[in-house]
Image 1 (tube, rainbow, N blue to C red):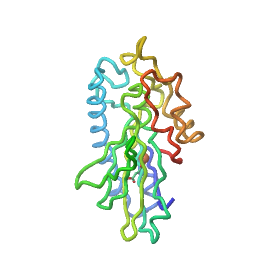
Image 2 (image 1 turned 90 degrees about the horizontal axis):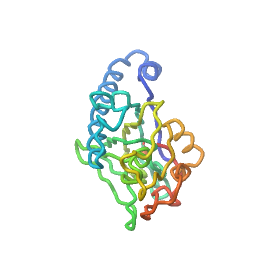
Image 3 (image 1 turned 60 degrees about the vertical axis):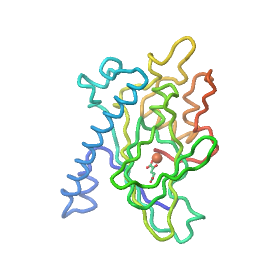
Amino acid sequence: MWSEGFTIVGSPDEHFRQLWPHDYTNHCDVIKEYKQEMKKLAGRLMCLMLGSLGITAKQDIKWAGPKSDFKEASAALQLNYYPACPDPDRAMGLAAHTDSTLLTILYQNSTSGLQVLKEGVGWIKVPPVPDGLVINVGDLMHILSNGSYPSVLHRAMVNRTRHRLSIAYLYGPPSSVKISPHPKLVGPTHPPLYRPITWNEYLDTKAKYFNKALSWVRVCVPLNGLVDVNEHNNSVKVG
Ligand SMILES: O=C(O)CCC(=O)C(=O)O
Ligand SMILES: [Fe+2]
């Protein structure tokens, strides 16, 4: 892979003290503020997306909390750097993968590189929009929505002359919460397609089975012919 990644789980203090021993507090403040804002946005997106399926966060999702702000949610920040690459056709920034999250909020700098797979069409470029963020649906949202919000297979390409940066806010449930197809979305004609699983359990499954992880969590064949995007033979990688 033609990239470098740095994952910040929890507070950035310790990581950044090591990187910039004499001047880390400013960097930490920026990251903390960014995470705070992303958490608010992610909570809002959760309410909107679930609302569109007839699920009210306040009543129907216990861990959303009394204010339905998903205060107990967990998150990590993934910083990606893709140096300019002399032979971009023979290198890949990040291999095709789905994220193991509920949602990922992605910032990209002004260099394009992100592509998503559109069923029946192929790889589509997602060029950066100034001040815009990309929202990727992750595997846990796929499970929670019983396949109504399919997770998106995506990859990052590299550029011959320009470097590229992206920041992925990886958003998921509290560690003790098991995610399963929401009861409001299942019934006699809509069986639950996935078994309950925590974020950590899912990350372990992903590490073992890569893009087949969602299929490993599946309990029965969909009646409506839905196919996991993960079942494509595109290769590996996290999220
Ligand atoms: O750099 C990008 O556009 C994609 C990053 C990504 O998919 C990830 O960090 O999971
Ligand atoms: Fe990703």
